[in-house]
Picture (cartoon, rainbow, N blue to C red):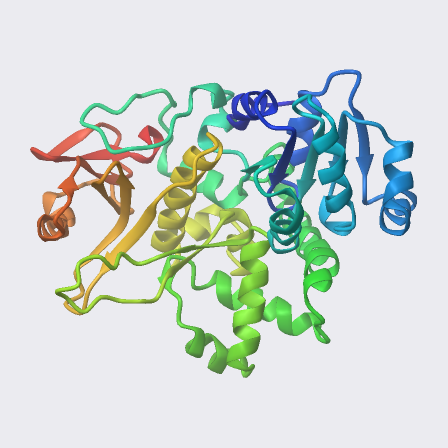
Length: 403
């Protein structure tokens, strides 16, 4: 069943204002499905997963564009960076908007080609797995999340067990439509394909098992400060290797690094980002939580709940075509705020807790924001409460289903 995606509105708007469009995102998040749902009969679809199309694109780009005339949809464009300079010539000659649509799953190679050939000529959008709104066919109603005194209550309430089943299942469109019995097979196949295709194109890894173990170690650290030395020591690999492999996870949309907030220079602040897996189902698979019940009651239940909330808030911005200003705060006194949203010179604080009984003590660190020299907006504690619960005059507790 085809579900409407929030990003469709942004794509339609971008298509009327840019000559080319690039939709990025990790494998199997539905990039090509979204674009094909918006195709008209005049646009030609070419997949560079096809050996013959790829051969033509790499060996004779000029003939490629003689064979395939705009408007075009080119899937997995990163396999043929030779096309970028020809696309530039092509769209510079044509006065019409929306001539070339592209998808790609490796941002490092993609953005290198974009910066060299297509800067300023195309719209770049990023797609993740289904958001909680898209799951319920309400993607057209999703707005960028910002703490509010009166959050909109669009989504249906979920029980604890239902919530963790959604977290455990993950957000890749294909797995959300399959039965739980296919969960392990789906993710094992995903990891195998990811390492064989994306990782091998970016890295010359000699030992696939070592990279797989690296994936598992990173997954176990979701929601934590990134300690590269600790990861290096635990895997007995060099620090440079850890940095290189981590950059691949970022480039291929597997992890997200939440940067620390630096502006308050009067305190000793942490300088390490926090790491989050962008799909909680993949994270659960890599950390061997094989049922939603085990995940809900296990040692990672809090960290993966925080990961789920953070990624859902991120989707609310990215799927609306916006680049968010997200940070977290932690100082040497262990004062921490999970998420700071910066907008129009105002800081909106967010705390994330796996609890159904919120208390104002859980947001006591919000007071540190008063020393930042910025406007402080309304704050929220996102948790498992069923109803909106006022904590102070300037903050409330809301359900995860209210974000």
